Image 1 (cartoon, rainbow, N blue to C red):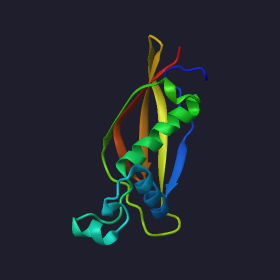
Image 2 (cartoon, helix red, strand yellow; image 1 turned 30 degrees about the vertical axis):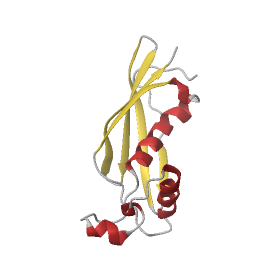
Image 3 (cartoon, helix red, strand yellow; image 1 turned 180 degrees about the vertical axis):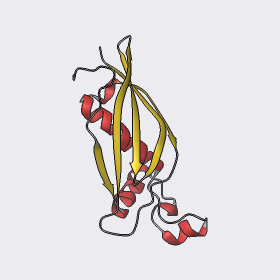
Image 4 (cartoon, one colour; image 1 turned 90 degrees about the vertical axis):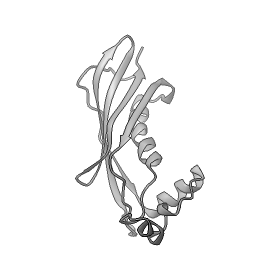
Length: 135
C-alpha cells in the first residue's frame, strides 16, 4: 500500500478511446444504444456524433485509483457527475481522456480522493470523489 497523505497526486492516466473501444464496451455492457456506434443515429437525436458510454468514462476513472492502490476491494464509495460526453471521432486515433486524482482528506482509515477527467479542454466528469480504505 502506498503511503497516503493529503495533497498526494496520483500519476496521470491517459486513455485513448476509439470507435472500436466503444463497440467492445457495448458488447461487454450489453448497452447497444446506437448513439455509441452510429453517427446517423446520434445526429438524429441532436448529438454531434458517437459518444463513449458514460459508464466507460466513469469506470476508467476509477481504474486510475484502483490500479494505483493495487486492490479494488479497498474502494468504499465512488461518486461522479457527468458534465460532458466524450465524443469519439471515426478515426484510428480516436480521442484521449486524461484522468488525475489527488488525496483531499484522510480520516479514520479512509482517504478521499478528488478525481478529474478531461477530453481536450472539456471536463467530462465533475464532482468526482473516491473514498478508499487505507488501514
